[in-house]
Amino acid sequence: MGSSSSLVPVASALLLLSYLIAGNNGVAAAGTSTSSDGLKLNYYSESCPRAEEIVKEQVKSLYEEHGNTAVSWLRALFHDCTVKSCDASLLLETDAAAGLVSEKSSARSFGMRNFKYIHAIKTALERACPGTVSCADLLALAARDGAAVLGRPADIPMRTGRRDATESHYGEVESYIPNHNESVSAVLDRFGSMGVDAEGVVALLGAHSIGRVHCFNLVARLYPAVDGTIEPAYGTYLRGRCPTADAKEDTRDVAYARNDCVTPMVLDNMYHKNLLKGRGLLLVDQRLATDPRTAPFVRKMATDNDYFHDVFAAALVKMSENGPLTGDHGEVRKDCRFVNK
Image (cartoon, rainbow, N blue to C red; front, side):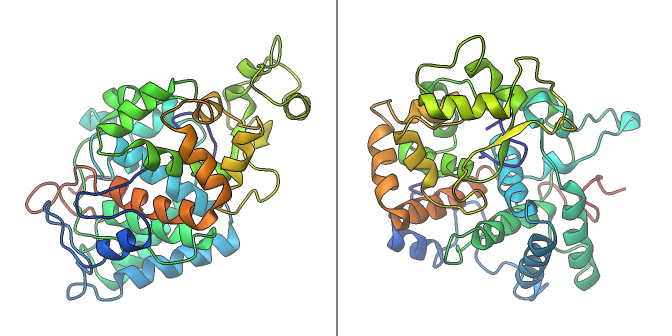
């Protein structure tokens, strides 16, 4: 979620496309159709035949060298797509001369990292096919391939054809990205505006199974007293990780807690199992286990990892197709950090 994790996307989203059926058949269906907004499978089959393979190779290589990069791609896609459109506006750097302020400087982007490796992936794509593959498609494909290396067992069919924004949406980030203390209603409304239902939300927040959360975003649940919804032993552990209420909003502050201490770098249903034990790290996580709109999906995913993976895959596709720029809208940036000259 917004400022919740140094690595997660919230997060971190989302299910039941108008042309998808939930589950394995839903994911398969996504692989056979062209969406009404102009996205399609294998968009680069003629203009850059190895585009998707290049992204996959880069994601795998970066993961092997810097494991947390795969987590970063999932959070980056969430932040990019949730704010108006999947248009790579997130990646633009601040340009004072142009009056552009980067979305990355928003408080909701606290803890995001590894953007320099997106530049590495883009460089590989430009080397093969100059000015062809958009940064928005790069983000979508990197998130898909990041999920694969983190444990989602099958490739997720991902349509491409997105184009890149020529402006930042900095001023609107906080109104689009939920924070970690939001109510379930607020989170469902936010995702619902992208066509995501409660089942998809519970799946996508399962990405909180990987990565970590800075103590700055935890101490309100721990001090002066431990939140009563936290399992007592887990509360003791968290206070050990975050021993003071005076945690700083500073990514250089290494005080943090893992979202999942059992399989911390595996995208699995341990997140949902933990919620049922009162081990939700963030307040919004734990609330999913008790809200009647989400609790049934938490329970089902906790007992069925394949079901979680299937819903997550369809949800990720849905999120990746939120309001993309296509056709003559936007541009294909040569450098994801800057608008073309």
